[in-house]
Length: 427
Image (cartoon, rainbow, N blue to C red; front, side, top):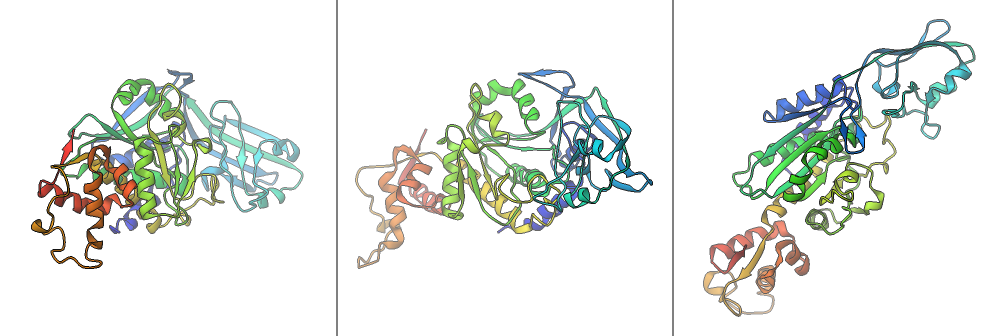
């Protein structure tokens, strides 16, 4: 472990309170936080009303205040107390309603009576409040005042992008989203782990690949970005990952791309197999995040996802229970390390070919025991197997999968073979 977990948890605590939405002051606040960590971050702006494929960029949503009062003026719900109390993109309202009339605008979770649900209505004009079911059951007949001071203004939808140039135009993509308010695992964890990965990649002395890090509102953000950058991505992207739900200490999960066997899929599966072998596998049929856009027909990008507990599979998901208690320094650090190992695997992944016929004389190079006896060759088994399968036809991930070796642990062996000029890279 690198000890980065405490830093990541501190970052989560900073971005968690931001009142993000598709396009809102909270989203700007998060992008400003990212700019402080990634000074070269660029912001792309898509104006309200712009068509992006089959979608239209919505207006910006600004909330001055929102609350629900009973007939005696007691404030029951207040947006100031928790952002999830207000249905996302609620239209302005100032009404007096009976309890029966009010119920049609309330949302709660009977199966989780202490949780405030996360509810949005981005593309249909509605208004509403969210509350715990315990609170809802305590409402009594009478008059209630619902006040929502919100504004919809022509503005822009913002996508943050950091591009880190490598030795080639071949690219690796990391994408996360910046639109969910006050959810620690489902939203904030992806933001901070992606930020840490961007910092780490930027500091590498050598990068074979170029790296693109995207921070976009879910769905509409990735669609907007693809509408302007699809040809370049289709030409250069070799592997990509959607980073979300990476902060808890429970499971590791892998969601495949639609292609199922892309370079990204193979790297993710290899890393998880050797470092988190109890991970759970989900097919693309169980998708739910921006892999829907990156892997859609006509886009066909090689994008998969490594998560801790998959979205929708942990009880706190999309509710106020997804708070800072759900994520942990060790959970965040574990996800960072898993993705870092994927980067290391991808950077090392190439085709190697053994130089010369038959086995080389390893003991003369200090690579094999000079005294032959039972068990003496066990420590060099991986080295021998690598040499046996380095024929220039299989890439390194495939070879390591074939011989049952952890690619990350094999890197010093490969470096030694290169130093002794026993293998060569096949372009």
